[in-house]
Image (cartoon, rainbow, N blue to C red):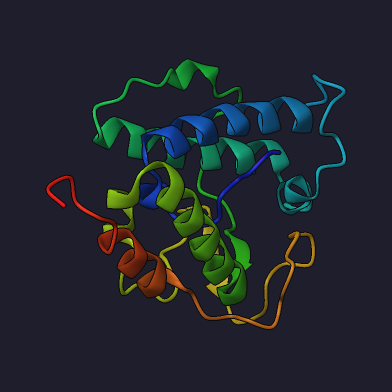
Amino acid sequence: MMRLWSLHPRYLDRKGLVALWREGLLAQKVLGGHTRGYRSHPQLDRFRDHPTPATAIASYLDGVIDEASSRGYRFDRGKIQTAAAPLTAIEVTEGQLSYELEHLAAKLQRRDPTGLDLLVGVRIPEPHPSFTVVPGPVASWERVADRSSGKPKIRALADQASARPSEQD
């Protein structure tokens, strides 16, 4: 399943950042009409609805590669097909960011529990540089079992991770 995170890539672990880069490149191909798959993926609508979709996805990828570079990774900027340029930010709701924070926390709990430390105390995460935050619920395209909870459960997940038996026990 494609996941184009609305939250800032700084919150992602190594696996998440690499996956985001790959999925962003796939999104670029889809938006450019260079692939048959994922054409109706709902997360692409926000890029498709932008006045300049190619520039919007290029700017998104640029934000991902900037984070990767800050960590010492070498993603190939040449894979971005359109030059990133200043653009009108895409709106993302507080509810969507909170949901993504919970979703990421659940992933980190399974694959990198120490990564939860970065999320503790964060209520609304900083968005990816391509997005601007507005009030509102979880996005209508997001698959959510229970939309009634807008509160992140990061503290509980972090507490569970720290309660794991240590190797000395």
